[in-house]
Image (cartoon, rainbow, N blue to C red):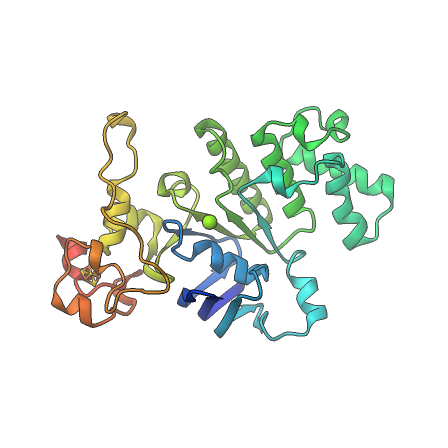
Length: 326
Ligand code: SF4
Ligand code: MG
């Protein structure tokens, strides 16, 4: 049925001198072929850590995974043999990062860096691999790719560098592509172009795409489903359209109210008051309670589970029905 990735009850902790930061506290989601899942949250919500755990690029130590599974095609990445893991992470599950400049090597031409994927993983020779690199650069719409294959990273704009990173990420035809804030460093027009490129590639290759973002506005047109994260948990999950129209969690509602609207340019945004919790001292009950305008006594005592509140809608809030219908 095209099920690619199953993350089950994933937990990640960072053991530091000051204590244990509980970065991921039981995250569950699936990703199918041809599906785009957006993971939305503020910084520190655990969205990037989730991606890093899937890719195996957490700082380790002090990162510890005390529980959970990350299954790719039914097999747990956390326990599979190292050899198999290396053939999965990178070739099958690949990632695009926020900062293309620091991800690219400044001393090698971009074409050489793309071609290296084919030399290293497909055993291609120099000229064949460079030819493939040019094709990929054309596919990600880099103008004059044939000439620019020899250019260095600093000779490209931020948007073009991000296209080069995308070319490298799709070079080996991954089944899953994870993009962590792929457009955050770019201006709004370029953001939209990069998002539509990702969407095109996703559709053409039927990849499972995970878009990690703090900005719902950027992913709204591209994502099918959205998981909203707070303090290392998913607090709401829905189809993007439903969530946009009618959020079922107070945190999501706050995020939606803080999206800049084109018809209210320059107006002060109604951001959510307060700060996300210190992950070493996550509040008891609902982690969002200190910032929540709906909070009642029960919210400080009992942790709400992620439950179905309407068809295809899940929310971890004691008052989800009121939020949804109110
Ligand atoms: Fe707010 Fe309570 Fe719902 Fe948490 S459980 S989001 S504090 S209403
Ligand atoms: Mg991040």
